[in-house]
Image (cartoon, rainbow, N blue to C red; front, side, top):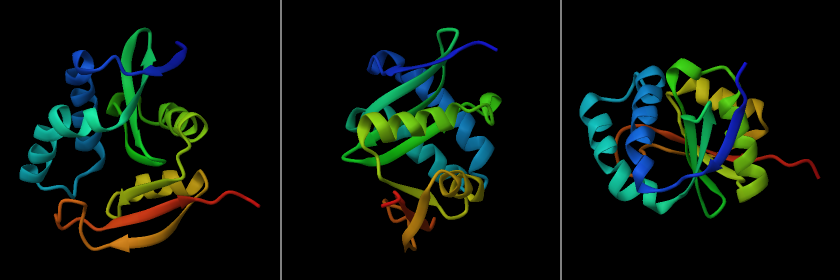
Length: 150
């Protein structure tokens, strides 16, 4: 199996590849998302969302296969290409975000049961809930915090 590597994003030049990963992941995991909302979010990725976070890119054989975005200890985004799901890429990106960027919090769509389970299995617990997403769309969010043993 080819080796997975993680690196910082090189910036806007690779944003189109990251959008393609985002779209692949969202199409595979966000069946609750209305097409218009998905398209609206996608239209803001390169101009608004990506520049606002520290992006780490996961690569196999020099090809991006996933990425995460962190801001102020919050995991703002973590997406893995649908063809690569279940291979440890998400876990590697999350571990990197925790150890290298100090991530302790993440919000996850309540309807995305697999993502909620992914984070729960890795030590995150629900500490709150919102009826809508950050843009006021009708997608409840679960607010999770990393449960570090004391």
